[in-house]
Amino acid sequence: MNPNFDFQQEFIDLRDSLESFVFRFLCNRQDVEDIVQDTYIKVLNNIHAFQNKSSFKTWVFAIAANQSKNLLKKQKRWAEEFQDKGESLHLLSKEHMNRLKNVYMSVPDVQFELIEHINYCFNCITKTLSLPQQICLLLKEVHQFKIKEIIEISGLTEGQVKHNLTYARKIMTRVFDNRCALIKKQGVCNQCSELMGILNSEQNAWEEVNQLKLVKQKETADDDHLLDLRISLIKNIHPLKAANSHLHTYMLEHLPKWAEVDI
Image (cartoon, rainbow, N blue to C red):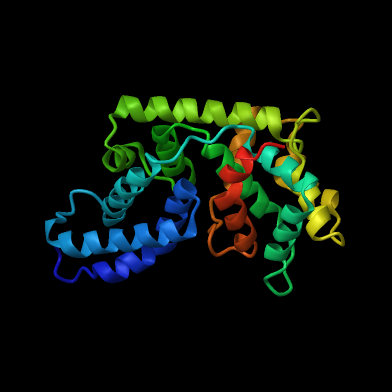
């Protein structure tokens, strides 16, 4: 290894991207902190074995992915209707709605960010994928790793990586096509505009919606391109550091429990 290689600084430079990657898997702030810390310790203890056969970033992401998979195996795969159930619970329960509002207002001068909620929605739908599909989609589409790097990180074959990418995109496209009222009139989910109206009544929800490139191109773009537009909106959002991360972290951490409530 190059004696001038400062792996500690390299790790610091990767940390935001690594946190974002892990959070999209685990949807729990504390778990992310634990995984990133464990990953750093493994890097520290094994840096002598790093032979530059892959990039440092690929090696670190492989360690974090393996650490995350151990936790994910204990979690149930999310159902597509989780968001609907969570929304219904809050519309029927004043207690749950007030709690959500209090979380939102816990940050001074907060304003609902539509793109961040699209990121939240993307995260929820990603959680409906199988674990290999999640890994391949996030690495390729959000973090822009090459196929050969995804093979190293995931431990999958080239054929498995390409298969999982293809089906992950198909599932994401189908679910968005059926759910998202931003794009389809028959879409069942209006959370973007509804929550903006509830949490920031002074904001003009549909005026902001109509400014999105995603909405402007919905008449001419096919569903596959619309998925790419969603990814282009969310891939640079750090889910733990964005303006509304306190709200969406709360929602993601509690959504599986909300979905189990009999209403």
